[in-house]
Image 1 (spheres, rainbow, N blue to C red):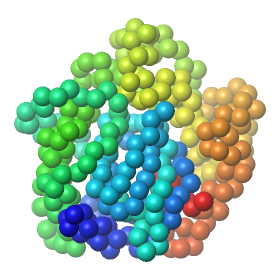
Image 2 (image 1 turned 135 degrees about the vertical axis):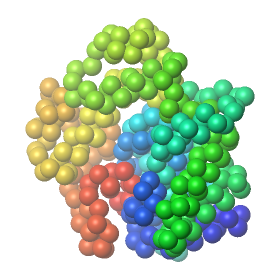
Image 3 (image 1 turned 90 degrees about the vertical axis):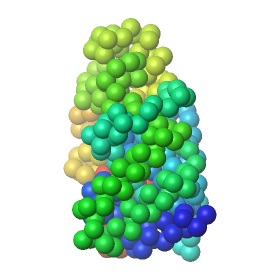
Length: 315
């Protein structure tokens, strides 16, 4: 597909090194990897992810979403996931872009676009094949990176067209949940936000259900449908990623990190950390620090949070 090939060229032009590159377009970020990467847990916020070249797997709970060239993913809630680039070479690197959703823009367009006939999928993340209209809009947005005079005027229009194409595409019904304040999925969204705000506290399902106006059994059922995990599993992943960031960025020790994020037993924390990240805390943090040093030496300044989000740390 010619449009997709052009998108890959534009991404490659504007990100010279492996890693994660912000752009003059506020919500647009580019990513590149010339090798396959280790599985990297992180938290996705509501966004569009479009892969132009290479392949990546993203795991949410017990579900795996496979990205390839021309496939895009939509995330409707803040979700803890694990991403891994599974196909990339120096000659043909993995290239993708992330576009964070502007909730105001999305809400305004959702009011003007007739709702789709098909119901929304409950899961908070989807992967679909991009149509030519969506690819054209993405390409127009990327071209503005070389036209700074036109960017302030035409950039918002290109973003609006991308959001419009998504709203009228197979994920349109799911995207409307981002701005919806009604229904069970909106309540699950509030539960996700509540857990995020209280991730370090002891979680009471009864209290959480009362906070969002659902019964405990209904909350459990619909929460799992959206996130592919239970509320307790969701909180555990947030805690482990929080502790990882504390150790990597602030340099605190394992026991302090465990206690700070809400664990009462450092030994339990170490066991669960190893199961989730594939290595004991000390070894994992040493590996990430080495990776951060490599990317910094390469001239691509990245902190621990960027490494975690992108997964651009090689095996």
